[in-house]
Amino acid sequence: MTQTSENVTWLTQEAYNKLKTELEYLTGPARTEIAAKIAAAREEGDLRENGGYHAAKEEQGKQELRVRQLTQLLENAKVGETPASTDGAVAPGMVVTIAFDGDEDDTMTFLLASREYASADIETYSPQSPLGTGVLGHKVGEDAEYELPNGKTASVKILKAEPYSG
Picture (cartoon, helix red, strand yellow):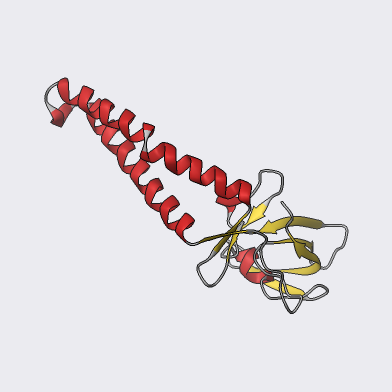
């Protein structure tokens, strides 16, 4: 369910199957549907002023972009459990609990993974997000800092980090 530095994306079997089904739909029935929409809009006449035609072409472009994204993702995917961090440090694919400013009453638990492939059951932060990059590599008990959107720095304490079991 997460990306690693080797450009490999670890997916659960369920996530892999879901993405593969989406790709099969987009490259089959969805392509046929969009081609029919474009053809029907083309029949309406002048393409320069044909909103339906332009909307269908834009939809086709978005759909083809998604096909390329899914193809690349699935080509680089490894199905199974994300390997555990060998040194006990926070790594992609882990559920992390942090305390803001060291206040153990102000905590948050999240999955450190790519949002697109995560379950809706848990809040997810990308390893490339400010919080993700801040906690990445830190061990339980350590403090970590990350930059807020306003340019200030926030401090968190890593309370718990364990592999996501999905």
